[in-house]
Image 1 (cartoon, protein in one colour):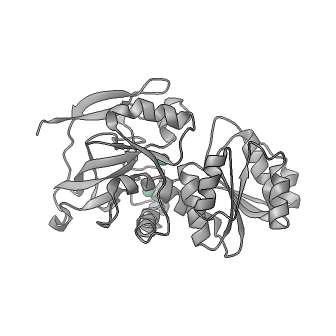
Image 2 (image 1 turned 45 degrees about the horizontal axis):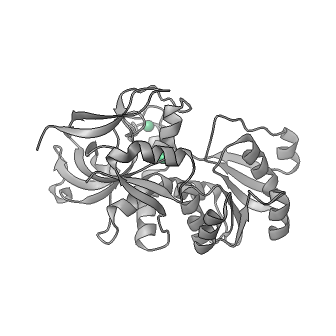
Image 3 (image 1 turned 90 degrees about the vertical axis):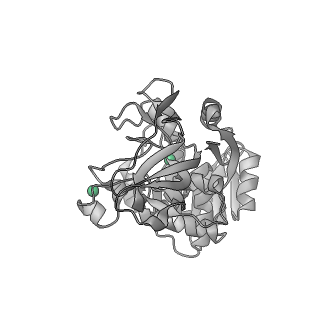
Length: 343
Ligand SMILES: [Zn+2]
Ligand SMILES: [Zn+2]
């Protein structure tokens, strides 16, 4: 084995990602080294490149939907974990703050590391992470299949829990990317009646195949809130906003019934604009949902293994085709996630 590996590096905002040879990392006590099999592509990489998300770190390996096999153990890690197939949780909280104490590492103000966001992530052949951040994947689930659930699936589970969906509620999923497609399935499994909204017949046909009770094509439907009101009787109980333009956010708020809940997940450079009276007289709730807890990641692995949620994969391509993949993600010309493999 050589002592370097291939990795896609983020150098800073407004700079192109670079494929480089970097040192293969060694696990410290409590850590493991994972030989990466697959890593899903998320819009976060575009947000980093565009400077929309800047956590201050530079020159690290991107990619945070990481699946692979534990192949080297740091001191103190149980030998039983050697060879385990795993999906990686990408927050390593401080462990001491009020958020970490209650399991919300995604809110930790001083995380130790965030693979793919501030420290080395998964568009590489190996990654080193804390042992408890590695969630065991059952043998029947292929690693390239589960990889995108590391962010898309766990984010969907977390947002679904944040919304506290009650059986029978009308749930709009506004934007059918990787998170939206998983969220639709989660909302169905929670007893929600799901309305999918996006552009294009292909995505909406897929939504219906995945169990959507109604699918609305934003390319052809002139008044989407009116259409939602017609389907639901008054409006949606919950809207998940996954697009994040001024237009779609305004539209999401307009889809809600009185006392409806809007959950913000997707974002762009644009602002959410609403007059407070809209929130006040209809008693609307607007909340954000970011990433997931470690438990949410365990839950998504269980849900996929049980066949409750099916990961939707657009295509699987080699690491070297990263630029092609990023272009497709940017052009929104994908049906589900693109997954990079390291083979
Ligand atoms: Zn992500
Ligand atoms: Zn913390």
